[in-house]
Image 1 (cartoon, rainbow, N blue to C red):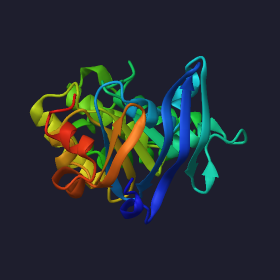
Image 2: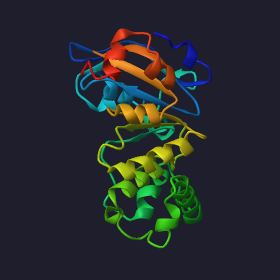
Image 3: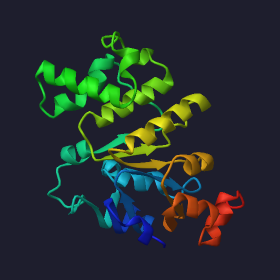
Length: 258
């Protein structure tokens, strides 16, 4: 599968990971490393399992009836599907950003402060510090510092998505999962989001699902190509896009496989 070039410094590793919806095998023995301080893009046609795989990395699929798994996804030396794993802890360490911005109908401040509050942070000075750090981290602080009490729903879609990322980093995670985060954004807001991802990769492991080939080529260090619930090829993005090992990868990238 060509994973050897991605194994150094892996933050998350899937080992023969399988996921079933009832009797249907949706993910078929995936073996993938996600390196730290880098962006890994997961690409593939609709229905290939890429979003299902992404949601598996912080166990969001647990919410779906009839889902069961086999194999492992290892984070910090622990299989996250071990029964002893605390889901609140896992999701504070492995944050999630969805396709459409999911800003809560709360103030900008409370959108960012909600996760730290759930974790028990009550001191106003601590919350103030977390909110400012998180909003600075996504380049939003200067735009909203005088409007923190205003509704987050008044922000543009692009800024709402930045706010969602600020909320994700408010718990000091290691990993940020992004499920087609630019699909609702215009081209300018998309490029701003990609610039933000490049900045965030200095401190985090980012994993992005995207249907946009140009975005994957532009905004990732590594690429995972999936087809039919399987990983066909993984490797540095430049190599996957310019010299793919598997003919199916080449057909998909050139638009001959949809």
